Length: 221
Image (tube, rainbow, N blue to C red; front, top):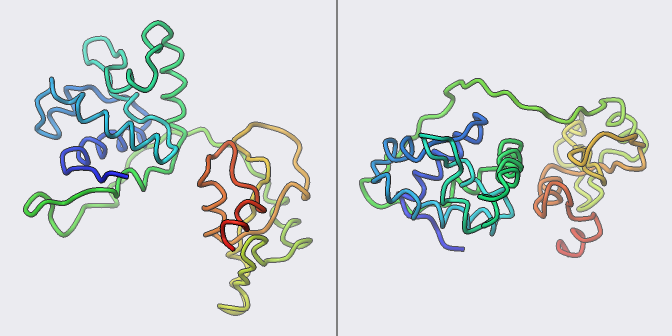
């Protein structure tokens, strides 16, 4: 997996910011914020889109649009050539981008030439974000942990044994059929207790179709 150059990372950071704010970003804005000639912005979008494919992320370059009409630009064309004749394809991909919250890997892969980046980075700036998230039922979590215990069903990690009394509450609950797949009736049998690391790993495949516990156990062992 090729690492980003510094300029590619700057463009990726602008796109990730737009994704978090749930908006598109014009080629002109990208150009102004990165000091890249607006006509050359497209060449930096291609490796970012390829990285999204490698990481199994939505194609974030679909957020790059033309200022004059708001149409999706060349940064998405190589990944979905039909979007010009079928605008709904691009709209659906934009929705996937806005609904995704896992951009850490895209933002952290970077080559840092001397003098380009400082040793400290600004974080914590408050922004207004409007998101639609699937509702979870807290009673199911309590029932799952009561019936199945607070030990990870994948790796066997026991937070109470390792850290002591009270830390069992750090165990998480994983839906075997992801909540992201839509509204339905859920029973305790559809849930398993997992540690945070295994929970992250289960969803590393994709949000809609995660690894099964059995698949992850085979990888783990």
